[in-house]
Length: 180
Image 1 (cartoon, one colour):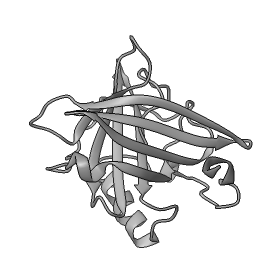
Image 2 (cartoon, rainbow, N blue to C red):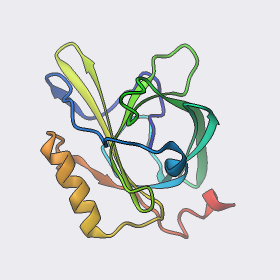
Image 3 (spheres, rainbow, N blue to C red):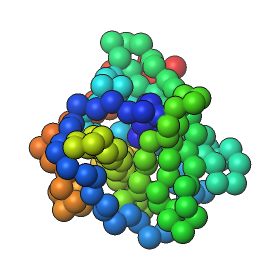
Image 4 (cartoon, rainbow, N blue to C red):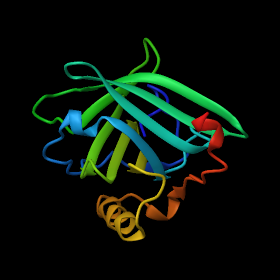
């Protein structure tokens, strides 16, 4: 899931600078495009609903369109933005923005097989603190527990407190407003 704000606000603040985790060595943008379902995330103040999905489309070479949607109390909320690779030498490190004239937020792909899962991490430094974001995503509304645990292990290895991850409700009936 991409950040809903160029200048993100989060509920997960930690002392110290952002870690620099290893990202996936190659990211194939065309294979990453399409719909992803959020399975777990670190809590944020800008994303409060359930049934969260992200749809990625190619806007132009190096620029991906982003459509994030969620259901909050039966109401569908959506926001559009763009993501772009900052440095072609590191294609797994993107920057995303949703509002004009706001600084972009980091969107780092730590792991993906393109067909079933993606693990995304972002972190922003603020003097003595850092705000972390992470999303475990799937091509469908569920992901095998074994895969979730593997992705959690990656997060834990870079210092993310996996006990703060919260599951996203992807129940078909609850999420029906998103599919209308």
